[in-house]
Length: 67
Image (cartoon, rainbow, N blue to C red; front, side, top):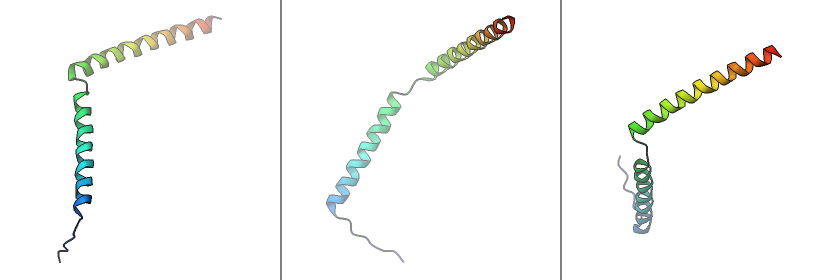
């Protein structure tokens, strides 16, 4: 059995405004998202930094063993 609900025009207007705001937020987020090239570059940089941290950690560990 289908029920018909009446929604006041003011309520419908508020709902539409909020939905429009949400779509605006989503669109703004998509425009500010990094490109695949930028993501690949950041991954390479992250990998290089992690390797440097590993090397420094190893050197510090070795120097502490000597002392």
